[in-house]
Length: 196
Image (cartoon, rainbow, N blue to C red; front, top):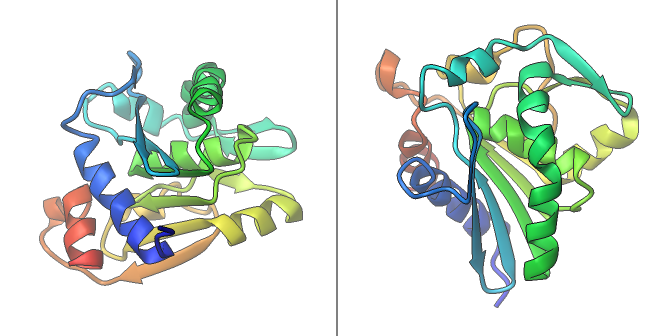
């Protein structure tokens, strides 16, 4: 049975919530946590966001780094790059028809970068509360992201506006969901506000 895009996006958000409590398949000392979830013909590649103080070092290394004519968030690209081949090997080994890449917060930035640099050709890239991860790209990358990328944005969530002056690519689903200063960013808030 083929799931509709909205059902897939809701499942992405559920998996992002779980990514903070379930054991990741890849867990690095610089904050990168990745889970692989196989459901039917879909492989979900799920990135958790920042959950330790040291992760913020990566978040603040936002000076752009050029790779294949695209300017990426330097901290996220540097953290992800050593693991791209491992992710590709896993995806090739399980041979699922469809690949969905998703993440919350910094995990959304990694999801976006993986979707562009890996060649995995994901059906969708879905982010929740993600900072901006690409500063500048060519028109073909813009078209690729506009077709595949959906960003869920709580307009009160400051993280989604960082780094200032950078663009957000893809489609943005925006909701004004004001809770309190500390409760506008967690993945659970995105699940409740956008899908319940």
